[in-house]
Structure formats: structure tokens, C-alpha cells
Length: 465
Image 1 (tube, rainbow, N blue to C red):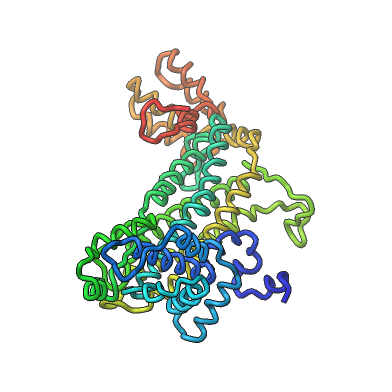
Image 2 (image 1 turned 120 degrees about the vertical axis):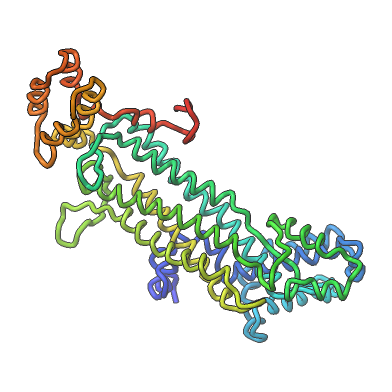
């Protein structure tokens, strides 16, 4: 089957229509990648054993031998993955398949005397949890966070460029106190940055403590080794945070926290996509057109906000999976059940739908431009939003019940600026205050929005761009 036909025949759109968009994740979450990460854990464990003086039955490995062993996972090939898969079909155990394949490679490398040190005193979950920890951390750091970072960069550009671009706000869908487009974009920037920081700062945990989490096999074979210190040191050597108190499985609590953090970032982006969609619908934004692209099968004029719609849909799918992971993975019957194993195999699609959503959101953000004349016309058409300003100034000068007076004038009524000026003339206030009220304009009634649009560090006074 040709590659093109394979894409058309794929069950999942991530392996079909969207394959090129998410192909970078295959080196982290495919079955071949999982074999490679397990292999990496097994090899590093063997090397670690050989460096431990109290583990006397494992001879030391010289520098060249260690390099040859590491080459097994650093130069892991399709042929290697197929060979391990053949072992898996034979023994019906994917972790044991990796062990048997390593033994065969040791024979070829002339390192047969290390065979019995491979997978010494380990349960499959010791290997699997560390393999998944590595794949999740590297996919997060090398794919997911850069994709979110690109969106943050674009939001920052838009916030700065449109910091002073006045825009009618809408609360409950109704005209409200004006804002600026840049300030509204900076709200999303700040929210997404906080979510990004939470994703970044979450520690990925791992465990190496045997079949029931008691170090039983290790302790009975080599009681002179401090296995708690050994376990901590080995897990940290993989740049993971060690856990000692577990059942047979790593409890997945931190992975669940990561799922929650990703879900939060995705939800913020869904919110952004829906707002941008509405701004496009209202004519506040235009979209750059792609040559040859069709917006409708029957309406030639249409330029649809498909990138934002695509992002919203795919981020929603990702969130549904992330929600399931966060609820399911921390639960295991007694010391072990395998229900987490099949769920973990779907981390790839989950990260894939998230990545696809990030890419589409960024593509959409890179295509939009602000229609300032439309924003201005909308502000002019809704002078009633100045009612808040008028009644607040009147409160300052002691005018009786100004809120009620403005409510009677404006609530549910279509007004123009002349109507407001006629109302101002009826007020028993100083002429200077009347002049102040007449000078009000929806386009300039934006408070500190322009400064807020440039605010870099939320909660840090005076830190303006």
C-alpha cells in the first residue's frame, strides 16, 4: 500500500488526514518509540548495575562497551523495532520481548556474560513507568511546550500591536464598557502563560522498586546493597523524580496532574478560538486568503474561520481523553491491575489532538488582521456605553441618584451622542462638569486598557512594556 493510500485507509485522522501535522510525535508515542524507550531504560539500568560496587555479579563495563550498549537505543532502527515485535508475537509479552532482544544483541557484541544482569530483579512496570515517564517528559519539552510557546509569541505580538485599538466590549452579549483589542488578547496571553508554566514545572515521576513495591527480589538477592538509595539514584539519572512508596505501579498522580494542566491550557485556547470566531463573524477581523482555497461548495464569497473551528474541535477531543486519563490512571485495584496499560497507549492520540489544535490555532492567528474602521463604527453606534462614565462622574460631584437617571434614559433604548448631550444640558451641575461629560467619547473611554495590553508580568506593579 502506498503512503498516500495508507493515509486514506487509516482509522484515525491523526494517522490519515492530519498525519503530516502530528508526525513529529511518532518518535515519542508510537509502538516503535515505546520499544525504544523500554530499551533505553533496560540499557541504562544494566550500565548502572555495572557501576555499583556492591552489585558484584555484574562486571564493570568499559567506556567502549557502554557506548556500544547505548548505541542500541540511540541508533534504534525500523529493523530493530520489527525484530522486537517478532519477539513480542512469539512470547506475547512486550517488555520480555525487549529483554530477549537485548540478550541477542549482547551475544553479537561479545557481551554474553552480562546476559543475566539484563532486567535483573525488575518487574515489567519498573521498565514501563520509566519508559512512559521519559516519553511524556520529552514530548512535553520538545514538542508540546514549543507549540504553546509559538502561540504565546503570536498573542504577544497582537497585544502589543493593538494595545490602543479601541473596541466595544460585550458582557452577556450586550454592548458594554469599551476595551482595546490588545488588552483582550493580553488576557489570553496571561492565562495561557500561567497554564504553560504549570505544564513546564510539573515533575515527571518514576519508580524502581519491584513487583509489589517492596524491593523484595533485590533485597533477597543482594541484601548488602542499599536499594532505596540505588533506586533514587537510578531514577534521577534519567532526569525523573523518584517515588519510593508505590504498589507495583507508579501511581500516575503526577501524570494525572499533567493531564489536568494540559486540559486547562486547551480550554483557554478553546475560549480564545470561540472569541476570535465571533470577532471574525462581527467583521472586527479579516483573514488572509490562501490561493486556490474554497470557502463553500456553493457560496463563492466565503472565507471561513476553519482554523479556529478545527482547533476548537480537536482540543475538545484532546480534553475528553485528558479528562479520562486524570480520572482513570490514579486508580488501580489493590497492588496492580492492567487497566492503566491500555489507557496509557492512547497518550499519543491525546498529545496528537492537542498538538493539532495548537497548530491550527496558530495558523489562524497568523492569518487575522484588525478592521479598525469596523471597530470604530461599532463604538460610534453605541454611545449608551458612556452611561457608566456619566453616572460615575455625577456620583463624584454629588448629583442625586445618577444611576437611576441614566438607567431611565438608556436602558433598552437606541441612543446617539446627541441624545446624551441633550440629557447633559438638563442636569443641574456646574458648567465645567457638563463640559467634562460632553467630552466623553466611546473610542477613548477605555480606561487603562492600553497599558494593560502591554503588561508583562501580572501582579507586578509598574512593570509595563
